[in-house]
Amino acid sequence: MTFGAPFLGATWSLAVEEQFYLVIPLFIYVLAGQKKVFGGLIIGFILFAPLLRHITPDLGFYVFAWCRMDCIFMGVGLAYLSRQKKFKAMITTHLAWVWATLFLLFVTLACLINIGWTGIGQVTNHFILALFYTAFVILALYSKFKPLKFILENPILRWIGWRSYAIYLFHVPIMGLVFGLAFGRVPELKSPIDVIAIISTIVLVCIASEISYHTLEKPMLRIGYKYKFIHRNKESLGT
Image (cartoon, rainbow, N blue to C red; front, side, top):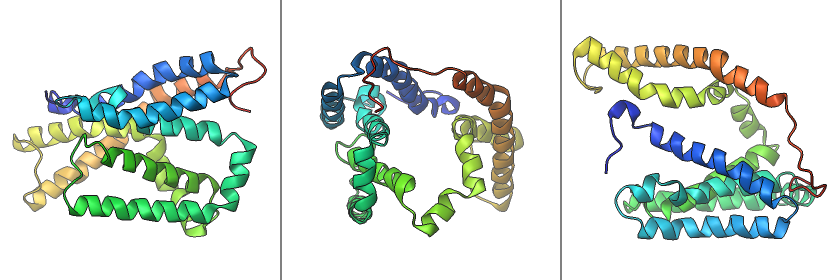
């Protein structure tokens, strides 16, 4: 099993995300008002994903949606918890523990890298990465640490964030086209002229993603914002 044609290689992870975007709204709709079941299933999915990576052969352990659902459902769980007043109060009064957790996870990842235990599809490393990024998002949401806020609120990073989908999708094919048309070879960094080709790629990717954002993504977001999704059950998962 391979990632397919090089210019399509990046689409596997987008496909994983799209599968969850199709399934999770239905999952939330069906379980609205059943908070214990909802929470139990999220925890179960998170814990089950590493086991699925362990038993799934070939590249399936890396690219199949169900093998990556620990990170996805950590995001779903955090999105739910962030709407709970008790969770907000607990986190804001225990931010030091979140910082400590983030540091310990960082040290753990550094140790895994040092011993070479960070290959794709490993049972534990993706789980630890998911925990690390979950802790980071919690800090991004609730921490008032000024250096962190300064970095995350940087307009350049915000611009990249809004266009990240297109940037990720376009960067490989555009780089392939630039190097193919200019030099007749695959992208490689061997000489100063290659640096110019990479800079040209970055400029073209930014232009393409900007066009995509304004002509496709932003209009679709406007359509989505026109609707309010309220479950008929008064006891929703968001309260």
